[in-house]
Picture 1 (cartoon, rainbow, N blue to C red):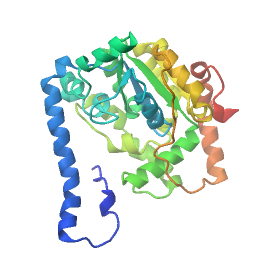
Picture 2 (picture 1 turned 60 degrees about the vertical axis):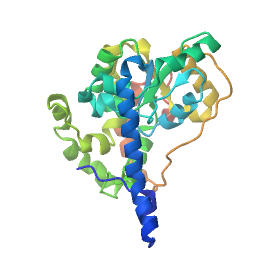
Picture 3 (picture 1 turned 120 degrees about the vertical axis):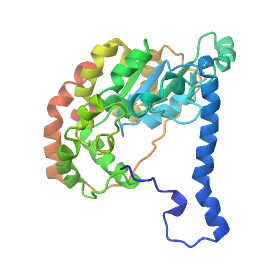
Length: 309
């Protein structure tokens, strides 16, 4: 069962006055109620709302939040009204397309932007689990014909270690030793992909939170996605370029989306997690593990991945 996320105000053993404690404990409840009201209103007007023109679909811990926030500042890009990732195509597909559409801006709000800039704005969302979930690609292709997909890739060795630190900090991982978590991965993931494919509404905690190596085999996931949407609608971006030369990376994204450069862009790192240094022997073993998968990225990137140069 998925552990309940920790509330930042309750993580330390600091006594609180009853009134303050009650106020702190009510915050998530109030926030959830506000989201419920907003979503209910959205469903009533779902037919008048935009659907995404593009999605950032992964990979996890590869800079997706940084790119999401940079694109959200573009005048012709419209983010979801409630949260960064709706998680419809992986976690909530049984809720139906009207539920999904309810998360996006009203089409009427796009009209002033169209009049001002002479072109249609684009709605989007970012959900890094879409790339890895075995059914998300087919669902996206079915419900969003013509949608463009952006995939960020990073050194998979560093990604795996970063993901472990991230899941541990959020309480979704109970094994503090990275090497032991890697050893447990095959057992934890055994049969989960097939269950996701065959059991309606099935959600796998292990598949989502413990796939440290599997989620770094990017070429495997791209090969599954390509026949569903076509290579011309998928942009694969090396996150090394994103943080080394964000302006160039940003212009590549805008060119792929057919958007003009409007205003300045600011990139920041988000969700960084402190972690212990990886033993050299583990790094070497993982680097060898990912070598054939990294080689298959060259046609997608148009160059050798930055971490292999």
